[in-house]
Length: 230
Image (cartoon, rainbow, N blue to C red; front, side, top):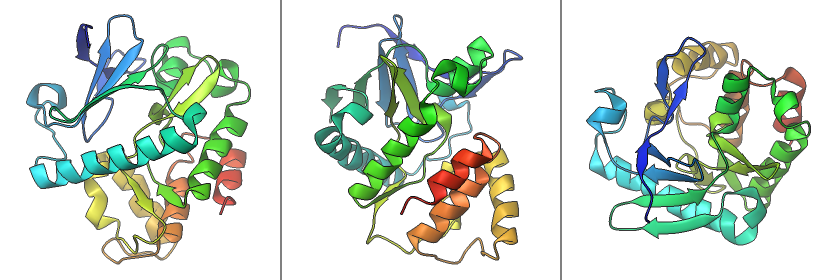
């Protein structure tokens, strides 16, 4: 595509730049109308903190993204960004967006999610229901995994998604998906729930645990609603 792309970071209120994603390399064009998921390890972008350096693991994440993002695009096209192009050779997916991600908008404008998108809870819950309708378990729940386009939430990051019959899995098998801070919170939540780090559990149990670890990002009432969707 004929666009000039640069690395995309989440900028904190103190000016610190955080990697937008721990798995792939995030890119954005100058106009902030196209976001690229580039499934490659980049020393420059990840600054030597690449969680995934095994090419086989990266290929697995790429395959999951392709499978489940395109499935959503087929069955629920209004709930994910429009796919502009897929470069299978370079392992890049080009997505149509309208500005920075949902979390970054909140950081940039110092607004709550409600101020940015008053019905964001209903929209996000609707996306979760769509996943359940397709019998998917998606664990990439961070608000940076959503963009807002024409007032509608669009879901991305399907590399950490499983079909209903794919479990059980363990937390330890997926540490590459988690920042150090998220791991710390998850360990506390897991211990409180009586779950072991290395033991394999059904997907629905780990989904409940995952939602618990995001109570610092979302209101309690939203978490409770999300946990009730089966």
